[in-house]
Length: 558
Image (cartoon, rainbow, N blue to C red):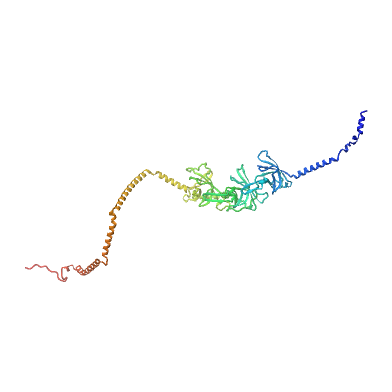
């Protein structure tokens, strides 16, 4: 049998006759897997389309965030979930990959903000207690921009004010090393009207940069005349102007803050635009000082001690403040003016004409400089005086001294005009005491002490004599005879009393004495004619008659 015979038999076999042709090989059974594959592809596409956008979040510390479980919420509604977390390439932050819901895509714009919600205890109270059991979550606050974004920064602190809130955002610049932090209050007359949103330090300018938000309607209080200063809670001062205490709100008392206002002598001004920049002053007095931006500078060359004089001390004219001490000392190593004896302490002061109630008018500094030059010729001088005996704080007092009128000679120190000074107050008293001590030191004390020793010896001798006399006097007093003296004296007085009673008008002796006096009086009356006759003619005592002739002497008859 040839080789072609088996082939013919194979071709004629039933199996060979049942094999389909190439055009008829597709079977309807393939429709099932194709439909299943299409359904799976559609499900995959539908799942991909319904998953929503994917975003990337960067956070400094991923504490409390877990991949696959931490939610992203808006108004407590879930809008996304954290899928993955890994460290950044520079290892300074954590990078979070999150899947958002499809309906959240309009909220993913460039000014949207994310922050972590977790339990917090702060000055404003306790927040986030609901996350104690459920765990921390990420809060999304939709922005107002129309520019889409897929990368965001996550803050560890909630924002101070929501995006688009009515109010005013401004910038504060200061050189203060204060402790202002995000969330600190901004107060006006003790009432909280805003918060600090940002606080950064610019190393290039060495200044603190703060951004604050003041909510409406209080944003109208901020004008171009407004001054901002740090509120430390309690401002306690004891200086040359006395004892002062200023207390802010309780929140500022606990954590500090910022307060603002318009100085009473300035106009209210015009309302400022957003993002305006203001200076942050240390306190209210410093802010008030900042309004005096037109001033004259002079140097005081003080020969006395400047202990107690500090920067910011007042410069007064008869009790009215006209300036401020700017620096103590100032340019200490500069060369002293020629013609001065000794070494003086340079003190820089500022004369501020705006303190005299002319803040709203233009100040001509050169006119004021000429005016003070004329005052110097009239005897205007500066003197350091004590403003507070308790603290020893001093201030600069300006006054006219007429005895120095015309003695002013213009001087300059480090290219700054010198304000003439005189010693006064405690410095003058100190110099006088020094002179007195010098005179006392020149006294010869030894002769004085020797004389004083001799006087003390004489005093001791005299005291000894006094003691002896006292002892003799005591013996005399204690003598029995001396003790009987009072009794004898009493007896003598009794006898004298009896004697005086014997010559009383009712006694016989008194009556006899009166009778004798009466008889003597009658006798005197009887003798008066005889005395008168003898007074007129003394010979009447010898002759009987005054009319007879004088007898003629005769010789006796024989």
